Image 1 (cartoon, chains in turn yellow, purple):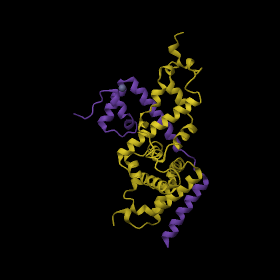
Image 2: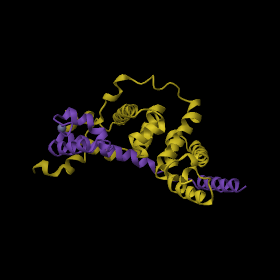
Image 3: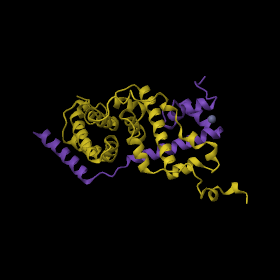
Image 4: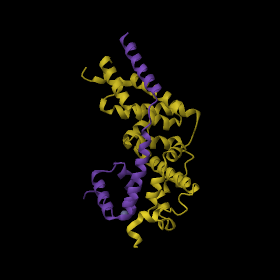
Length: 212
Length: 85
Ligand SMILES: [Zn+2]
């Protein structure tokens, strides 16, 4: 049989598999932690996905597709086993106006523009923890697309395959997810007073505009 | 003749996410680049969204606990043993 994927697995496969998994382990764990929102559960999810990947290896047609394929297994394992105990029916609860919010536009309200470069300022102050919290608060159906596309850099098509939905669904969920994220970050920043008051250091940084 | 021509900022913003995700067709990608070179407003918006996307991408880097590495490698060793039977 010429097709490597349908051949019985041997020590060469095992060594190859071990190398691939070792290289992907930080990414898999990163995705698993964000999916589960819990480090210990993330470890269990990775271990389970690795076991399933080994079992399913004969069905992998081209080994170049390994990365996307393993993420598919990880996501499916999460969806089928971990999610059931938590959020149900979260797709129905999405607001129709979800994809309308733009953080950039909020930061470009005239009152904020007076301070110079609000979007740069915002990004400089944006903390990893805030971003993690905002992502963790997304419902599963939106969090999974953000994790696959923005965190793990899968293509729309790969994400669609991983989630078993059409590419158009990936697009619309991604738009909603990003809008919700931006809204959450804006509300956070607003609550923390970051976007309401003047930033004293701004004037110095503007330099040429000062004219004196 | 090359398909969509980006004639307005509304059209550019509609395609922005797919552009940043490198999901546009080649001609659309080129169109977007030309628009962003000309349009300061869309350029700032694109830059902001790109930075935000990059910040999210950084979350991919989770240090793997040694416990997990050990567990995974034990698992893989067990596969061989099972396969050798
Ligand atoms: Zn424009």
